[in-house]
Image (cartoon, rainbow, N blue to C red; front, top):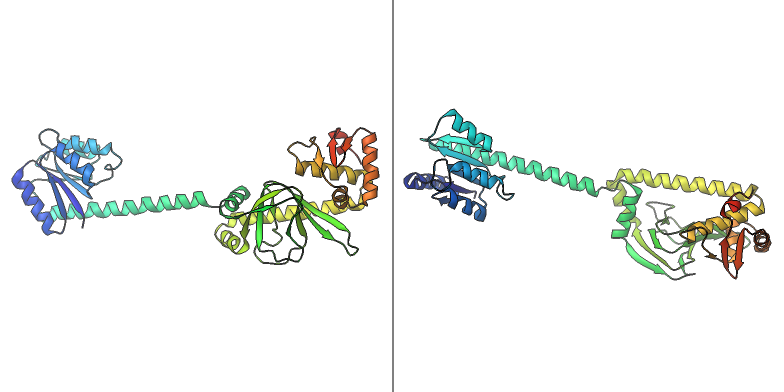
Length: 350
């Protein structure tokens, strides 16, 4: 049942109009002057207000002006009810924001028709506002970029921790998760037919891991190991499928990421095949420095076997090459710690 606030100082007219509206199945709340009407409007928040113009204490224009300043009452439909029929009075009421204007004397049909049309208009406008708001919220929550996708995993994924040297997944395990690393470094690697380890990738903070297949649970093609204490969030691929189904833009972002990874792997394979031992060693040191440190010149702590497996050379060969770099003043070596002294010269090695 809709609630009508009727503000009218004429007692007989107020009571007769209230009875007429109640017989038409409306809940009616009455006020005998504008000041009382404003108080009741704020307390009750009626569905529509019918208000006389000429009243003591606060006239109808004052009531409308006061309610229009309040966010809770400014959208309530407002109909003026008055014996004044001059054009300037009608224009003034409409300019203040009134929805309609009924002159006394009025018929029951005129009053009910005005109320019903205003309530219908209000319901339609409310639905439009809510729909626009829902569309805006949906648009704001849409996952459009790779960064949005990472935030989604961070907010909805399962938090996982792995100590240094712990295996995250093994080659051949089913790839049920996509991971987002938030702390630490992960090394992915394979064993060749002779049992020699070959590092296939290094992943650090803010990198995605395990996305060889975005939706299917194919076996992992490599083993992932924490080479620093790792914290990350994992999202099940079933959940990821739902995200991709409803956020098509991120699908293209992930495809581009996969493409870039494939291009990078191809370039690394070409480098392994054709670069000199010095170039391979220098690039590998730089790669680990980039992944492990905020600044490349900070010391890195990494095993010689890990360096050799990424470079694609024998450990003994790598050690000899690093000794040469040390003699040239390009790096400093103390135990497992390696510090880059000449960053640009290391990059320029061919």
